[in-house]
Length: 281
Image (cartoon, rainbow, N blue to C red; front, side, top):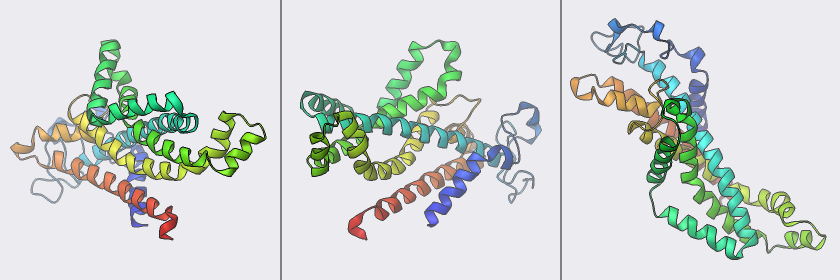
């Protein structure tokens, strides 16, 4: 319950950042370069209007964290949704139909599992940037990022659903559906799918944190969201440039926000896994 409450606070602060944040960090008219590099309010030289200090452009760190968490959370949720839909669909087909299709999909999954997910995401992101016009990179950066992370994470859902489907397809209710003449697609969607979604939902909740970390890593490397829409990873990268000059708050607070966000989501996923496990009841 504490994890759920912490997750709710993080998600609420991200979703309502346009109304809750003290400043709009993306509004150039609201920025003041004279307020750049202000330390947190409790440190000597800090101002009460900037609770966590300001960055090199005079942006309020608290406001940038709230807006950045909104982008990070949105990319994480969207990429997990894409991976879930793709993985569940392929896992159902593979587990129910079997044969050559099953062998082909699982060999593709085995090959992809031999590479780190971040490397797959980097490869897909790089191919998309080369294939698309250079003047549209900033416009399509977030969709490309979602696509790359989603395509890098579908394997876990596919393998989980495949294993559960292979068990469910031999049960009596599936055989009864075949006897009365229901088509395979109808059986998969109406009968098998509801019975294999429990572990998938738990896996999706846990993987949201992984997707957020992947997005932050890509943005830290400079291939994620554009500078005009900085996520937590971009804020950490910007702050890292000033870390050794004494402006530690520019990177420490976004990093701490990323840790709290991912930790709360992971704890919520662990709680859901225990709550949905019938052996622990």
